[in-house]
Image (cartoon, rainbow, N blue to C red):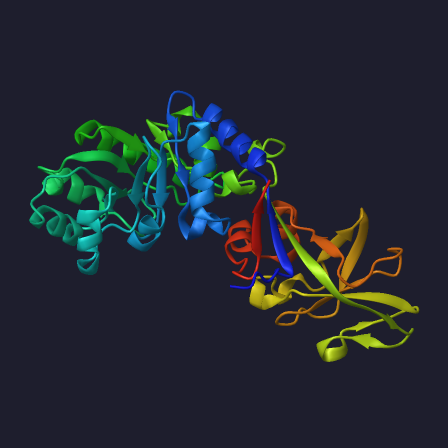
Length: 348
């Protein structure tokens, strides 16, 4: 097969990823610190993320589906994987075969797991107020979990990224369940929950977005490092005369004779139209503002002040997650997980 270089690169910083996990582990106190690597490691590549974090000491990983779990095999020594979406009827072959635990989240899933008749350990999700996945507290307290070998009993915070009274309510419910339901470990805190303090840590924390450069709460600002830096190759540098427009809809008009760098990237790659008017890139330290609309696979930057920029040069997208999120309106999660398959992912 002929090796064809991609015109899109995603530069990934292993040291930043590991430093973020170590900071989150320190904030978790005595609790173990795991890692949520669903959605292919938030778009960075789950196998590589697992390898780097396992080498740093992480032992507990969480994915959404059994397809994601299968893609991680074989697992590094001493590592466990939990599947957050539990077991549907079509998942049972994978659940019996793969060395991963389902996170059971409904009476139907518990019945299905019991009928498998193997007595293997499982995890259980209890809903404490999010009303998404998980058994209701009254179901759990009325004996729904009897006879299960529960490794980790989990719940999930709905508003941990805000100073919401819901956080304390969910914490109180989870403590009450912990007192009644035996399990090897208990886990409540995601990235933002870790920042809420030691009361939320229990035995195991499950950070996600903060591992990959997102800032979930103000307490994490200055501690979390950027991990992912998208880069795009220049297709053409063209002169646009004063008064001429660039792109669909003629939304940008040159106020002077301008040099425009046309780059190989667009909304098909996850760089969405909401970046128009706020997006930017850099070339050799020079800021290049995005001009005109974002097309399917083409964007344009004003390179009038960028010196000898030329076809084939690489531009680094402005992609600091909290700052870009505030400007464009996408969540930090969307900014990462939306980055498409046309990016060559390069760890350094």
